[in-house]
Image 1 (tube, rainbow, N blue to C red):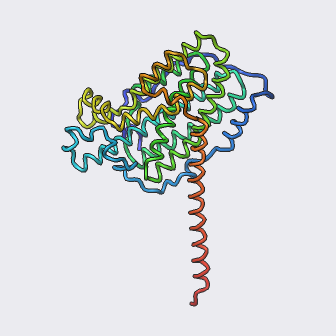
Image 2 (cartoon, rainbow, N blue to C red):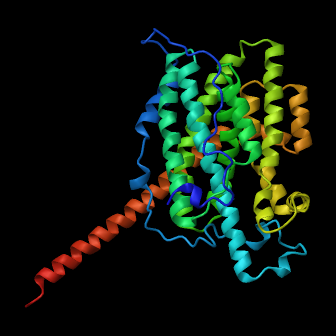
Length: 369
């Protein structure tokens, strides 16, 4: 079924054209590179996987409760509208919220694929080009998986959120080669990792849990790549150049904070926009959700050397400054372990099934006629 047939609101244009800026850079040095980055490139090659085979698409998903979302997590819960909702309305609301979340994941992954391809083109160092090429494939796989989940399991899509589209546009239009790193690897990927992790760790539904765990295993490498490249480069910049990038981060963080409201969902249920925004802001669950979503961004921004007073004050205003002391390495190692544990559980289950089949075959073969 064509995607346009399952959008809640038909996008104004079937595509989105962002004028390309900046130079394509070649590097004729083929035998030198940073050991850490080349090791990450090797890991990127070793960790390639097929979303058709690694994920168990036969697992059933209830489109009206795809994530096991509790009532308290819905922005309308406790408002004057909640009691008026029938059981069917509440099921529809869960479906729309899951669709909205995974649709933004899908659009963000396509943006990540395009940004990674842009990095291949514009970054001056060949070792970074090598790794970005593996990331481009990763992001294509993620977009494929999220698209399949939305089409086959939920049957509903939302257009790209205005704030996400704005940040993607700003990232891609900037001619400086480091900006796709900063906008995508640090801000958008960092936010996505935190969102993926929160759903992965709270859902009791096996298919979305598999999808998120395996995607996060890739994304942890992508953030590590951005940290390595930007930390090295930003040591060379002037204070004025660093401040320009901090301003970009500040604006991007506010855009991402505002992206997380899901107001579009409530509007589809007849709630006026201003009222929908108020409910989203007042929701205690969503306030905690928004704060935790910066758990990957703040320590990464600090780690790469962007930590001026104005940026710190922005994080104070957002209530997330203390997250700067979080350990990204620990979070990423946990992402790896969770994905590997899911693989081990699945392989063990498959092995038990094969052993049972062999036993049945032996028993049937030994049975008298």
